[in-house]
Amino acid sequence: GRNNGGGAMRLAVGLLAIASLLAVSDGQMNLYDPHDDALDHVQPNKPHADALRKLRAGLANDPHGMMRWWEGDYPCKMPWRGIRCEGGNGVTHIEMSNRGLSGHIDPAIGLIETLQVLDLGNNFIFHEIPGEAIANLTRLETLNLHNNKLRGKIPPELGNSTSLVHIGLSRNLLAGPIPRELGKIQTLVSLDLAMNFLNGTIPAELGDLIYLAELNLGKNRLRGGIPGRRLIPEDRVSKLVTLRMSSNMLEGTVPTTWGSQLKYLQILDLSRNWLIGDVPPALADIPNLRELWLNHNKFMRGETPSVLTNKGLQVLVR
Image 1: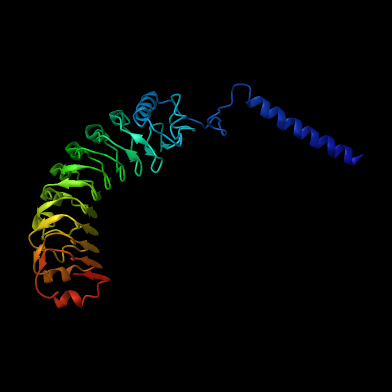
Image 2: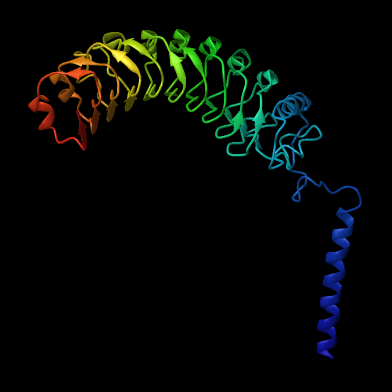
């Protein structure tokens, strides 16, 4: 008899489970969120949803269907792939790198005022960067458009940003000068403009970026001298950890004033330029220097100073 009772109990539990499933499937169940309950406070955000659909229309080639389900007015719920909303119902992250996307970035991106991260790296996006729209985003910290097919100039309007921390524009087809306005972005920590077709001189205003830890200008068509004193003043400790300027057409000498104020610098790459003159002994005063690349320059005279050869650098290439 006990066995029958156990069977009846199992049947009752099973029927209860089925009944509870039926109860939530009568039109009340939220298909976006299987854990929908009274704690679900996500609100609709039609302006952000509309702006994202304009972005989708511009990025017309979407081979992985990343944006296929961007419908309705709830961009902060599944299945809006590539979208995140942290701490509210405003879109904070657009993360769609390595997705084979091509097309252009619609200026409607500037209407997503809560955006903190725009990562569209490693795609096939062309046309120009909508600089004014991006500068409008007062919370944007990361702009990663690395390894695309972007053309035109780096927009000077980016200098109006009050929040950018990381700018990654390397491996594109950008041409023209580096805008001096970038020196106004007081929040900037890393600036990577390598492997483009940038020309003109290195703007001395980049020396105003007091928090800058990474500066990569390598593999461009930059000319003129290195603005040594202005780029790295002697009377202020620099936050730079890596400084790369290789494979350009830079002329003149290695700055003789660069030394102990580069307290954190580990990598200095000035190789493959048209630099002349002696290797400054003051480079040995850079306390944490690990790699110094000076090879393939036009004519660097004399021996490497013994203070440098005795420093025990991991890499010293002349």
